[in-house]
Image (cartoon, rainbow, N blue to C red; front, side, top):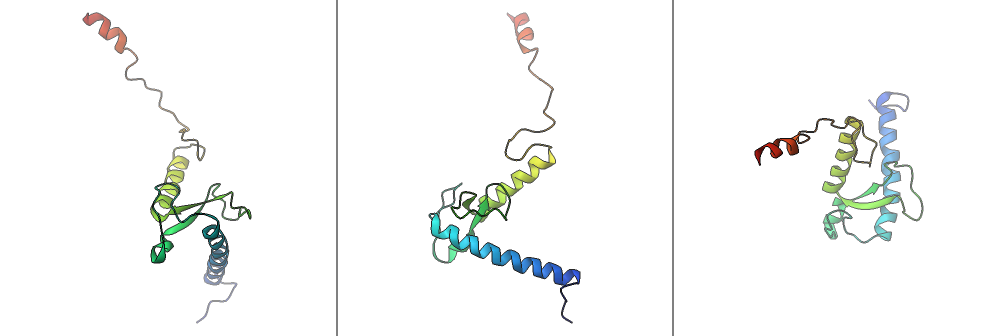
Length: 122
């Protein structure tokens, strides 16, 4: 039984097909524009291993594909996964993506009185 475009399965399949077509277009452009090197770890890719090199959108918006490639960088699958994991963890901590600053910063200062304690030991 084939899923029609109004069923949830049909809508998902259509969305995945559109995403794959869009990705193929910008990936091909990025591979022509940039050297086949991961921008994070510096590994070089060629031949069959080229499939391990992915296009990362710097602003995390997959629809932002400027023709000059200014929103793209090539990352290996491992660095790409790491980048998205860092974004997920930052969001869970309440940080703004890319700032590295947690929303609820630690306020406890374990060494605040250390100077006073050391003065007594002299």
